[in-house]
Length: 350
Ligand code: P6P
Image 1: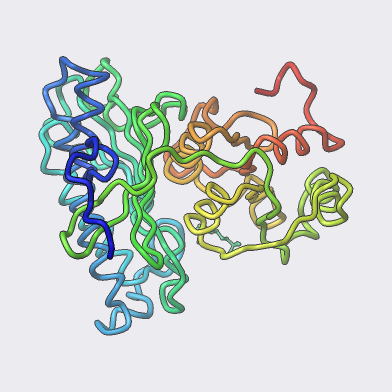
Image 2: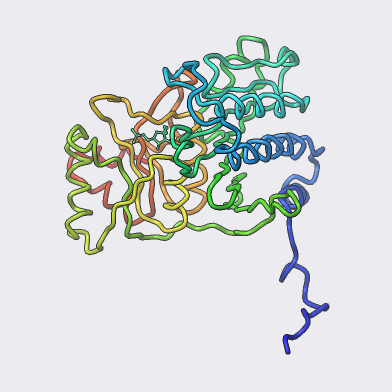
């Protein structure tokens, strides 16, 4: 006979905490004077991701597969879901009065909202549907977001440049992965939390209260087809991982959708890297809306993220679609990379 759940169980043993409740708890604990505008902003974000996931889940049925035909600012043929995801985010994030500037992978220029003449407010930077080239084959894709405060300088020009801040300035960051389940992974500098979308109630529910990246893993994740053009340092590093010279045996796993590869690395440990290549000598991934938010999550979970030389979060962006090489992983894998011959001397590395 199964025991009835203990009605006197201390709250928190089995309590259901939604993302909204989590934000209110964090606000009460860390920002008691806050007026709730930040959580209003995040409710717009989560609404957009629920709209996106509803479309992603039905992609094969709604004849949205295949390219919309247009070519976006990245020179990539746009998938119809890309367009929808971008429009959903621009709409839902444009509603809260406290949002001054929006920067999207799909828009060549920042969207400065009418209210941006004044000072203050937030800047939200996002990749609406990262990995979208994999949609047709049902691979996990994701929305990546980064939240910054608008510099106090104010003024329309400052609004356009307001996103050009190092990643260390981020107020919060995260991603929503539309995989076998839909999970929001989020940090505001007080640890990393995972919230799984419960379709029965349509809410993100706390499922991973304290995500920590394993100190050492056994998976490396890189596009091996490009290895011949990686700089020597990266090739020697990968050879050491493959050969067992580090004392650990590694498997190779690469999805080709950053959110999927990063999510696995966050939970299982190891290393994910996108080195400089002949095709992309400055790296392929975008600093503002891919590397920065992911680096914030990874560091808050106990890992590290660099561009091969510098801490990602220390890089001062020059333009909003700037690319960067990216190496991120657990302590052991990142220390191994630091030791790889050709590494930059200690003082200039963080
Ligand atoms: P490659 C997807 O297009 C993306 O921007 C990331 O999600 C992913 O990590 C990377 O590109 C994959 O690039 O050159 O290995 O196909």
